[in-house]
Amino acid sequence: MAHRTALLLLLLAVGAASLSAQPGGRDTVFAFEKLNGRTKQLRKYRYVTLQLTDTIHRGANERVVIRAEGELLDMTADAITLDLSRLVHTCKRLEEPMDYPIEWHREEHAWSDTVPHLATYPLRSVMQVEVEPKLKGTGTAITMLSLLGLLVYAPLKAMSFRTGTFDGEKYLQVATPCAIGLGAGLVLMPFTEHRKLLKVKAAVR
Image (cartoon, rainbow, N blue to C red; front, side):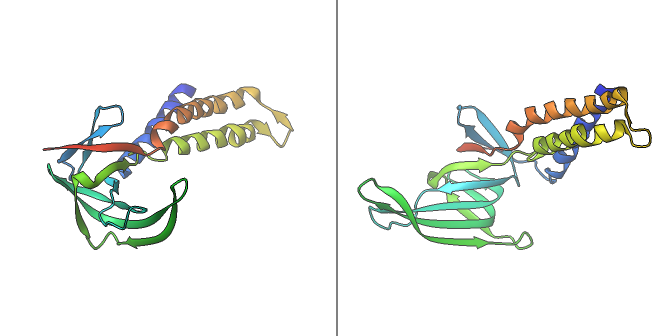
């Protein structure tokens, strides 16, 4: 019974997060390259962050780091198009003698979801693509809820404040599924917390 309860809790949490992370109309997919060389497909409207090369020449000792965040709308053999949510230009100066980059200027722009702001960038300028896991936060949520149940709810459930006794069997009935959920959450955390780093590969229709 305890194992069934833990499994049901896990499936409900993962299913809810998956539904909340998937808007409709995702027939088009685009191919990117993982750091291990394998292909990773991202569907249209997936939220991504592009790190772009310096498109403005500012001299040998200065560079501009550009980060563009938004929904992935299209990708051809030459360009990638986003519906921008945030754009950050960071100017850095390389200081001698170690050529350590020092940030000296930063410009940030943000747009609301209600007004589209399309931007197209040449693929040759895209150095790196970051994408958050679809089930972002699921592992942490399961871990924290299970830990709360194990440390707080289970002891309270087993304690009889009227008689001052502790029911060990009742505690195990509640604590066992919480412990299983805690283990499952810890296993899921590495896959649902960290952003994935990708490279542009090709467009797939």
